[in-house]
Length: 254
Image 1 (cartoon, rainbow, N blue to C red):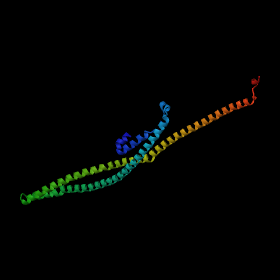
Image 2 (image 1 turned 135 degrees about the horizontal axis):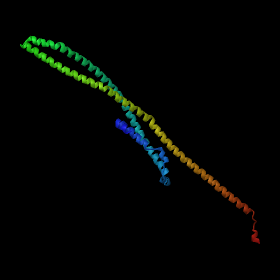
Image 3 (image 1 turned 90 degrees about the vertical axis):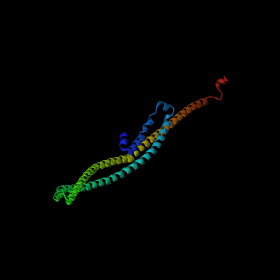
Image 4 (image 1 turned 30 degrees about the horizontal axis):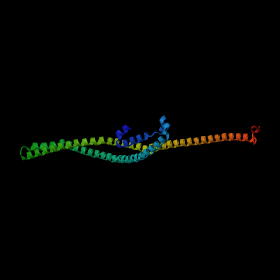
């Protein structure tokens, strides 16, 4: 859970918090009573404490479950948003590719045809005003071509970045999808199962208490019946003995 918390931020923290709370209550602890707990009536106190903790933690788990569901919906929205981002990056790549191809073709055409033609006009014009104007136009064309070449280089870098972003987007989407499934499993399966087991543990303990009470009642009833039978037997013997005596004992008359 520590790795999950570190890697997934708030969602991981919620899952870790939930697991800590769940692990904090062990139904078997109801059966693990020490010597002093048995002597000083620790059974009832421990059960009551366990019930209180169960109620408190169950309420906290319910709140965590709601938060997990909220995080699940957020992740689903992020997955949809990333789908849109992926589509935009793909569209951007296609646009960049078109600009790069068009720009590259223009630069190649200019270097093979336009610039040589302008160089030829400058050479033919000589050193007069017309030649100086042609030379300036040639220089402007070369500088524009250099700027365009740098722009094409920047477009190629942008294309690489957009290309690298595509698998990154899918990787994040995959992670979100995995978390959504894990959250769904926790909300739909783990939490109800845990609550069921805790409820069953408490019910079993109450059943044992009722059984012990019934056993005590049965034992008390049997003991009462044995005691009454013994008293009845003793009383019958005394009555029989008394019935065989005369009104006055012979010893009294002698």
